[in-house]
Image (cartoon, rainbow, N blue to C red):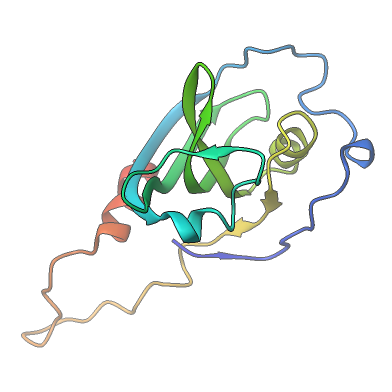
Length: 158
């Protein structure tokens, strides 16, 4: 899954306008999602997690990953989202994954993410056609197993 387009800089919340209008939390999102967890070196995770938050780590590693979602219904309407999770942080009384980067293809969702949640959200145009290879026919056709990223993309798209 690739993205292209208007990666907007995060503006101060005062410039963003409304998030989801008058809708108060909790918000309801329906759709499909894939959550892929990975071990991340603590030294790398600290580059993306604010210094005032305690990183949950063991032997120099923390838990990060990728979250892919295709929302069929939400306060922002239909949209796709990809979140790079920088690491696991301690937020008493529990822990949570820290979003290092959030990519969405809805301006309303981006506004809400920045203003209401303080997320590092960027508006992008997800375009799965950029990575497509022309279909090959015949005995020379590549028959290697499908990559994990392609399987994840198919899962999210349904």
